[in-house]
Image 1 (tube, one colour):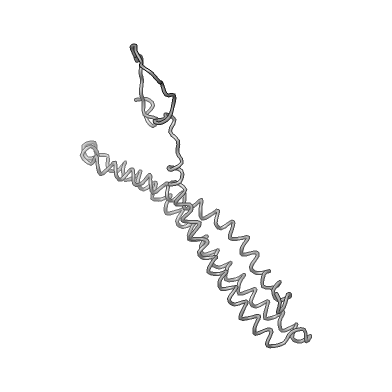
Image 2 (spheres, one colour):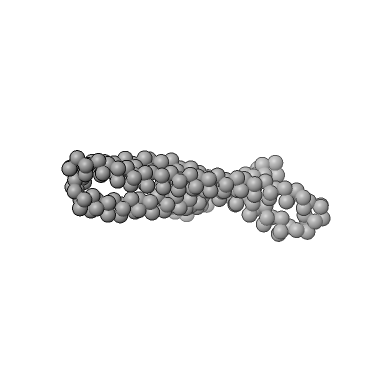
Length: 199
């Protein structure tokens, strides 16, 4: 900024769109990673149930059904992974275009400023070294940004499990002081699993 406000503005003209695009990229990566983790969990459940109950599966000749269930989840993971790879490639492409485009624009503007005697060769050299440090750090941050977004998407399920509050509390409640005399009778108690309401 001290050496040349004009060249600094040209540099940030390439960096600011990258920062804006990175926010959208992070959302996409987080959503895709969450989907991948969810489907992998379902696939793991199918595989675990099939292997642990292999005698039942064999007895009813149900191998094809279990394979189809696993393959359906596998296809979802594959498609999400393909989208994730495509987003990573597009992001890397845009990053390179914006950063190297900013560098090319700085060289062009610097040559115009030099022709008009508004900047010296030494100042251009100094600015280019500072700019290279800045631009390559932004490129590294941009690549790490995508990985952080993927990790955040994968950890969403863990955070959700940690913050889950069951409907039936096992701690707290009212405390009864003193001696209790009487009869406690429980009638018409019914139970069913949330996932198997008909059982």
